[in-house]
Image 1 (spheres, rainbow, N blue to C red):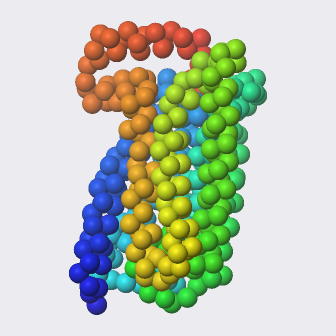
Image 2: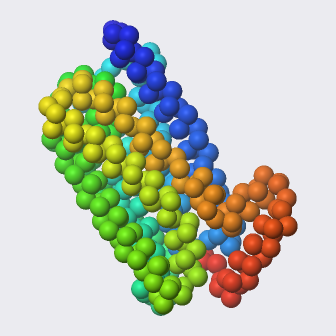
Length: 306
């Protein structure tokens, strides 16, 4: 059954930008993981943790293709049917927010506990880092099963697949996690602007790589969640609420897709590694910068997982 032409046009518009972000995001996240695996000088606890985040984002982007596949032939599912499809994507969407929090905590540990950071085994560090995201993801996956109904929904995605009660709790949890990320990130900025404490080249390098990515990620989620609560306060519900929220998924798709490109812009190491992958020769200026960076970290061995 077709909607009116406005709703149908909006369906196709959303499907279009999700497809574009899917292609851009899958390529970028895959490139980041490949570059870290391929280049020893890029391997560190931080880059491994960010590779895990990129993998989670790949799964989340795959989830966006479910409603694209339903939107093109104009198929609507009931919430229960949609949630059964979305369960793994609900898990990964909740978990990836925790990973972003852990990425800024990771920088804080580098700055405040450098001895611990260097001595702890990488596989133990990463295994411990996966515990909290897994718990949060499992909680919301299970919670979704406790609130199910057969209301037809405008689009099938993790947020809309959850009943309104579970969805409110889900967004509150995301707000809390993102707020903690913002607080720790602000503390790190203060630390890095105090020259007396900014003596760790590893933390400086990681912070430079992360700062814009964190800002874009947080802004994207805050815009989406703020819009969601404004809609609830305005009394929107049902199809009208889903209409607005699904248009705001533009910002969520941006959060899933931007990591590699922001890092490529900010980090000469990753830029040079990507150019080498493409067979592009480095310019003399870039080569001098890369040589200088290598000399700074030459005494430090790359971190190997096992």
